[in-house]
Length: 182
Length: 134
Image (cartoon, rainbow over all chains, first blue to last red; front, side, top):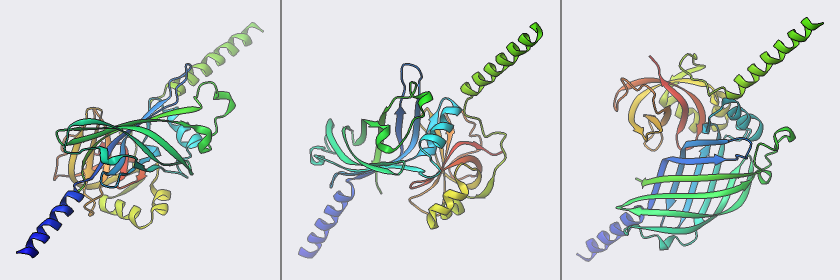
């Protein structure tokens, strides 16, 4: 009797631990380096992200070539000249939610948290801190965040002819609707 | 002399028109493009799982024609995505399509041939600008 109770308890904790892991393969990453002169923006709707609310660990990954621009020429320059996506096909973020315990998965609400981690793109890994918002609504979990990144930090050089039309600072916005990781 | 000036003007205008066309050129559709590589969804995933660097070299930016069984179709209003079975529970070959793309004959369980541009491998192999091959 005792044994089975322990077993059930164990199973139960295991199950609830397991239920703390969420993921998506349809995460959205928007990228904007527009200036007053020119609109330069792209969207990627195939980002992968995994969050473990028990430990606070969070990961994001995107394929650089899956960013879509309005203009083909911008997309080509982005891949060939700036991001060199043949050499560096992926960009990843690995980090930790500072106060993950404050997010109550069984309680509807909006939770503002701080995520600290490493952004790895164009072959350069740099620490990044971001404010993120998690929304829990009826068991569904979504997240949004926005960070600003200096192109120079990631060894992305802009030729002087187009210096005026590309912003040195790029805004990256992310959005994800998470599902339970099975 | 005046004639040359006119010719020069025409040349400049043509050049400007071409530059304007290039500048505004949208991302080309793959509808009429022939595939660089033809293979099955499980084979494509396997190539990336066994040696990602080699697979990147062989498949990145290539137009790939891939056959597979449809797991599901996702439609979020801005994009459609067809997930193809790959022999691995966690991974798929995902073909991303434009919102207005024709998905006639594509439903869960059916076997289809898709054509798309390979962008690489995260948990899945992702093809963009995909179209259903008729």
